[in-house]
Structures are given as C-alpha cells and as structure tokens.
Amino acid sequence: MTGAPQQFTAAQIASALGMKRQAVQWHLRNVSASGSVIVSGVEASAWSIQVLPETLRNRLEVEALQRGYRSAAAMLTTPPLTWPPKDFPKLDDITPEEIEKATKLRKALGPSLYGQHDVTLSSAEFESRGVAEYARVFGHGISARYWRALFKRTLQRDGGEDKLNRLELYLSDKPALKLPPVRAAVKVTAQFAQLTDYLDCISDPTKPSDIELRGVWSLAFEIYGRLVEQGTPDKRAARHVRSFLFSRASFLAPTRNALRMAFDRKLETFVASHADPNSLKDGRVNNGEKFEFPEEDKDLLTHRAVFYYRGDVAPAWRDCLRSGFSQLLRDRYAGKSTDKSHVPASVMELVGPEVDILTVMHRGRRAFDSIKGHVSRNYDGIASLRCLQADDFTLNTYFFVPRWPWMVQSHSRPSHPVH
Image 1 (cartoon, rainbow, N blue to C red):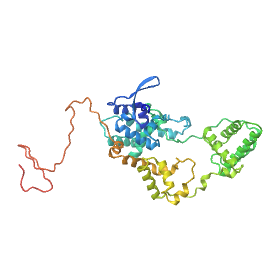
Image 2 (tube, helix red, strand yellow):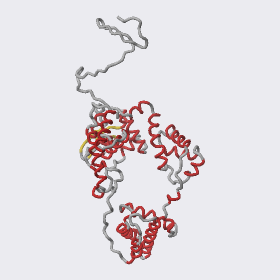
Image 3 (spheres, one colour):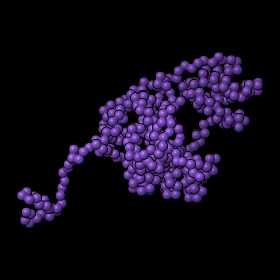
Image 4 (tube, rainbow, N blue to C red):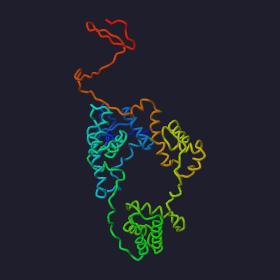
C-alpha cells in the first residue's frame, strides 16, 4: 500500500527553481491545492508534483538532474541551503574591493529582480535590459548567459524569502579576504617550544614552502603523540595542538573547521606511514600532465547516460568502466574508488552540462521548449477590443478590395493590372 503523494508549498518550489514565490503562485493560479501544511504555525496551501502545470514539472525535473538528485521530489524534500553558509566569511573580513563589486551587482540586478513579473516584456527584452543595466553599472558588458547565471544564483540564494537587499546574496562564492586578523594568542609552553622556534624560522609565513609545511605538521603530530603517551585523551590532545596551530600557524587553514579536517586527514596518513614525513607530501604533485579525456569515450558516456539511464551519469560511468571505455581510461579509473557511485569531478564537469540538455531534448520537443526562455502572459480582466495589436505584413498573393484596387506583385511581374 503506497502512502499519499508528498505535497509542497509555493515557497518550496520557488526556492528550488530560483524563482520568486509570487511567480510560482501565478503558475498555480488555476490549479487547486492538493492539501495544506503548517509552516511556522501558519497553514499554507500545498501541491503534489503530479498536479503541477507541465511547465513547472519539467523545470523541476531538469533542475533536479542538474543538481544530481534522483528526482524532483528528492530535491524538494531536501532542506534548502541557507545563504550564507555557516563557514562563509563575515562582511568585516572581506576586502573592500569585493564589497564594492557586490554592491554594484546588487544595483545592476535590482531592476530585473524587482521587475521580473513585468508581462509587457518578452524574455529577450528582459535579458537585454538586464545586460544593459549591468554594463551601465560596471562599465563593461557581459554575455546574456552569464547574466542569467547571476540572476538565477541570486534567486536561489534568497530561497524565496524576498530579502533581495542583503549584500551577502551578491558576493562571490569565495570572496577575497583582508589580511588574516590577529588570532588570540596561546600561551607557549615548553611542549610547544620546538615548534615555536621552527615557525619563527619560516622565511615567508604568508607562503611557506612544501618542505616547511611538512615540518610544521610533523612537529605538531610529534607533540600530539607525546601528549597521548602522557595520558591525555586523544580528542583533548588534538584540540590542544590545533588550538596552538590556529593561533600561530594561520597559513595552514582559514577556519577552525578547515584546520580540524586537515589535521585529522594528515594525522591518519602520518600514523599509517609509521611517522614518515614524506607521507605528508601533496599527492597532487605526482599527477603529471593534464589528462586529455578521449573524445570517443566522452561520446560513449554521454550517449549511455542519456539513452540508458535518463541523465544519471553515475550508473553510466560504472557501466562504461566495465565494458566500453578504452583501455587507457580503464587503466586510469577502474578500481580507484571504493564508492561505486563516485564519478570524478573532472568527468562530471566535462559531460554534465551536455548530458543535462540532451536528456531534456530526448524527452521530446515539449520538454525542451519548456526550459527555453519564454514569457507567460495573463489576459484576465482585459475586455474584448480594449487592447489591439497590429503589425505590417508582406503578401505573396493578389487580392482585391472593392473601390480600392491594390496590386501586389509576387515573384513574377503581371502583364496587366489586377482589378
């Protein structure tokens, strides 16, 4: 026995699609709600995916494919990511240049964000105005595609909250930071004396060499090992060493959480190698020259993902690794990951966009048309003949109006006038 279909509010759908809640409500104006849910103590109408207009359903499915979700329902049931995330830098720590750039972007996108429901503009006109406004504010132009990406990113970050004036919405994903602030000093005890002396000898503390980095980590792990041998619990010893590193070796990581992750990862490698400092080398130095993905293998993976797995790259990747890929590709990737659903990020970046668009095209013309730029118009409340639209035209046949003869020539000139 199957349960009742899941229901979603207009705000949830808007957040997933990077739209305003009012825009989704307009699409749902003629669709009866499937039920209601309680949101923050208030009853809100909700709709199941099955009753949504085809335009919204197609857009949800495409968005789910692009984000790597199994279905539109899985994407909608995933809690929306709040912006900015917890580890995002504070405005006080961001450089003035980044703040100025974000302020300009807010000014450039403002007219489009607040006027996105203007039904008098076609999609092309809406984008051209947005691109022109961007060029006016920044002093240089951008492509319509990049403008659309900025516009959609801003709406997705807002999450349907209609708080479009927040400066954080317009910052880049990794804004440049001011010089690292002076971190709270940690009292140097005898156990950190050797590490302190080593840090003082680093030639350029803002950009230490690979050998200097390995030296810092090696000494830090030796101190950690001595603390554990003296009876200090593992977690307490790790926190103690990390606290010192965060205070005196800010070049290791920008945040405490990043330092914790690097510490745990490198400590595991260090212990497994029986305290060999060479194990702390950056493994990427052995990657060699950039690998060129064979074009035939790319086409095979794209075809199999689109026609066999409805746009899901992971099973297509596994299938091609078993049989289909060239020997060069199998030697490089086969058996290298313990996660059967893992697809290298470089491969996803290479084939992902093409797989997404071809999957939609494979579903048919209507599905493809639904994701192209368009403007939905609402003529409710407009009486007959209140608005007229006219256009000139070129005729390819002859016609006659009584007492007003017109002669319209086609491809061949007539030998006598038409009456």
